[in-house]
Length: 290
Length: 141
Image 1: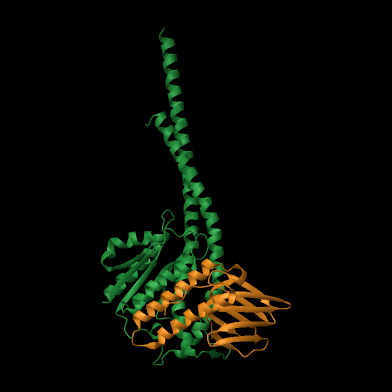
Image 2: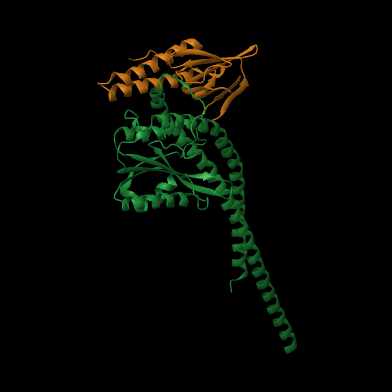
């Protein structure tokens, strides 16, 4: 049986752990609100943008002169997986779930005889994927210094991806991120960004537009921006998901610590009582022996 | 007529406007109620919105404007109220355009198309600087 001093120390240490997890939960809750707001504010732009692009793309699809970002390179041999995760851990299964989805996709593609290249955004995803797919790594984007995700950060990632596409390094690009549903649910998602995939629920434009300059020029101008927009929404969804996941993970940790403290306190009290009883027995039997 | 100005990060303005002057890629156009549905890309320039007796001005770069039956929505990659524009921001935008031009010149040596586009972007940037009263460096063409 552990002695009283040890028990007391353990209770103290669990108590300070609980203080830390509680604080982390509160910080995550505050950050979550901001991240959620940022994600919501970016939605009107992304939705409008996708709608206009879908309209243009469905008109241009199939034509020979369609830009490569829309029609593809004519092959799907080399895939680029852009895996976006958090820079920090302690957020439950958030990073693992994204990495797992990306690993499954990579394994599937390799099994089908395709070439897989991996670009990671966020340290945690890189660490997790490095174990199995180190040879497939082509790059890493470090956003450790970024406090608040801005569109310029997404543009940086997009520029990297587009540069590789122009250099003919890959045929298809897919981004991996976690969609924010609510605090307890985040859905790891894979979304193809190159070539541009027309959303399935797109029903066709109800208005006939005039285009200035012509449709093709607009499309050629919008497609690269569309890549940045998709990456930006992915990053923002990820930001909100990360804080949500951290908040619920830390809430669980706080609750577990509380339970542990209760258990240890009971054990501590029992041991103390046993010691007291022992001493009493010794005193009484000593007195009787006189 | 409803007018919306949104950037990727937030929605900058949403108001009832009487006329909107858009810096389109092929030239400025003023949109009033019942304009034919049009989609145009933007060049760097100043967007003027007349709402009643007030006039609001925004500096916009990159993106497009969608003119529909309901009104005008402008989706600009970067949009700043004209009064909030600083020399630092102007310099950053100019450097970016210069960078795009330099890269286009390196990448497309035998195709004039993209290089001309980049040169136009750079020239538009300088013209915009002049329009809002912020100087730019001399473009290196």
